[in-house]
Length: 258
Image 1 (cartoon, rainbow, N blue to C red):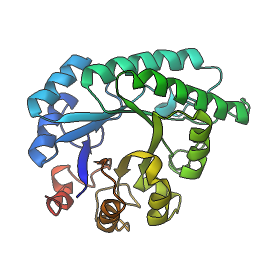
Image 2: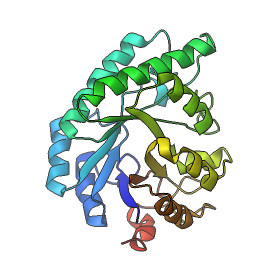
Image 3: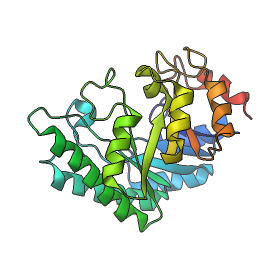
Image 4: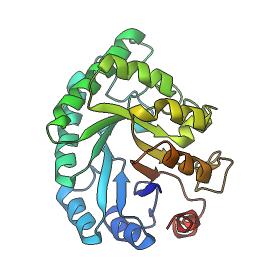
């Protein structure tokens, strides 16, 4: 049976972030992830999670201007110093929060930069993060994000990401697969999972189209979760969707698994 986690950056947003841990626990989750926890002191979030008896399993590294439409940090050849600062901040939060994984967002391609150098920079930064966080027993992931919702994103398919990971060549760096992004790129979910699951450390999901909860789109998510069991996946599946109405009304899918 899949192990489900709640993404607190998209779910339970009716509440301030520190209160979302208890809401997630009340809904049946025993693990959560947070995209960017950096607006709150790490000890405050750690204590809120502990009080709710939920684990924080994953956070993203700070990504600079990426979410505001910029290129981000991890792949930009001229932003190495900023990436190092982001890595230090993410490392601190990861240690305090006790996370299992830290995700590095590749970023958008800057047309003023050399394409090959951009990918080399990403590979080098992933290897650096993998080495640094391995000391703490924290795994590094990187994900392909569809270039329809995020035009210009550097890696939009698992094949592109696999090439970068091969260049990074670090045992502590793996894939994060998001079923929604795979579907947006019109990739076959079953075949893609079978091919890349050995490299995958974490899975996220939302229905497609819409990026809402399971049952609102066209994806056979129940079948995909069953397939993950058959393929021997033992990691987390994180609900990273935007509720169509309220979070509470979006969770009927969870009852069928518990």
